[in-house]
Length: 231
Ligand code: G3P
Figure: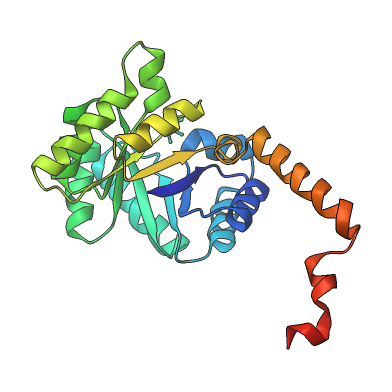
């Protein structure tokens, strides 16, 4: 399972990279616009913070295939490292994806709402497809079911394209998507941190410390081992 941060907020990305096993960052025009800063400096800074080996997905804003291809090449050269161009699934997007994948440029086909959109995106050469879970749930569809069937179809036809589930609002959605075999999940930093938070964990740690301090006071294990005992 790949865990990806859906954000362009530098401090939040830094924090997630430092404390959690994160595999990369995804952005889209809405996420980038929220930062309201210089686009070039922002994506360069994200790449600097995550390093060259983690995935960085940046979405095109171009509408026709030629312009999408131009943006993809320019972004890839500018951003460097493990780069994916995100392209919404439109006829022009598919045309660009077929050409870019032949050129060896990795594509994440995004704004996926149906199983057939995912299958056709994969056939066009996308490396990832990004179905939107919460937006499906919001229209009384079933994001988990859509992803489950995409995963199943990719297995039936031995398709190498991976599923990068996106658009999450709850831990329950994240867990259910993990259970149906999505290859990757991208979510905002706040939701990501909630995945490992549990009050009972904090309660257990408090109990351990109370018991320890009742015997050893303020001394830590490092204090008790001392320099000599470590050799
Ligand atoms: O990249 C797609 C994803 O960020 C959409 O999420 O929360 O806007 O539905 P959301």
